[in-house]
Length: 519
Image (tube, rainbow, N blue to C red; front, side):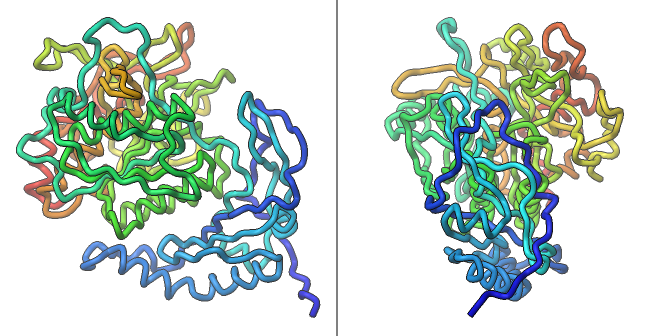
């Protein structure tokens, strides 16, 4: 029986440019098998709170199972009509996994897939818009996995040839910020997103022994075929080691669930969504040290990520995201200012960087992290894609310097990120000092775990409280994030600023505020 003809319509939010700085080398093999992540749009009523439910994740899953029954049936029919199979369905995540050959996927979504080379990296890419049957267009949020170009990069910055004794063990930096004592994060779980790399048990054992701390429980969670795979990328391995040893160094009693995923749009969104909705580990805080310029993402991919982060807020999961390590241009040389995504999402807590000076016992000076001689320093600025969120209105962020338009300000909070005052970790048996805003995200995630151990309810998305009570942080008022020889960036000052946000944590003050009062 011949399949009924279905009218195809453009899917504007799927628009992607050709990969930057890459050379097309040929067509993707027609018989290569792909697995795609099709995310459904939220249905009316999904925004209703589940916070009061005994098991909020189960309550949200049940609600979505009912709301999306017809949508999922339509996707199943679409798959059958186009020689695709339904690999899995997860209503809680509004996710349908489809599988099929390159040829079948190209025909189903009206696109052409090519192979590209970028340096030593080869990947599959596409450009332009996808096409969908008109009856699917209103219910599909994103189709991810056709294009597996890198969607984010590791941000850890190693200090080469540093003087002996440079930097501090992660637990020492927590003490500098007056993190609460008498709590360890016991009973809590910190989710850590990793888009490559891996860890060695021997490194973690050595790092925590050096901090005189017990080794936390560490669990590797595979996503989309990725696993704990140390030894393939030094940069990615450094990122993993930094994230684990910082989060565990300040909250050694918390379980660390490490979600390993491919560094593609599909892998990134799938990992974040999986962590947020994971009933087995049920994290209360999530750390993301990976990112890229917000304009590199298609609107559909960003919407899928934003929806996952909004789910985190519903489920009272705090998501901390590095704001980037290449100043206000985020490492681009196009003469424009760029903020990093997903730190710029209105549902993320963006984490900027500072440089600290200490007398060994306390911080004696702290400024914006800006090593302009090598182009490194905290990211931060004003989004060109997101408006000023309600919680940030009273902070009165400046307009974007070039567009002169208001937008979501990045970052929200900050912490030590400069390499000379950075974090001493162990990688491949060698002690290293590493910096970057990728250390600030797990630092704050660890603090959240300490607070959640005693809080009457998990912190969740607590930015509205921080912006309403900025005295819970110490503002950083000196420095800027401008690349050397340019005016492309912002200057710190009183109140919120696009370098360090509201400031750095007053650990004990935050602990007392949120353990005494439900935010």
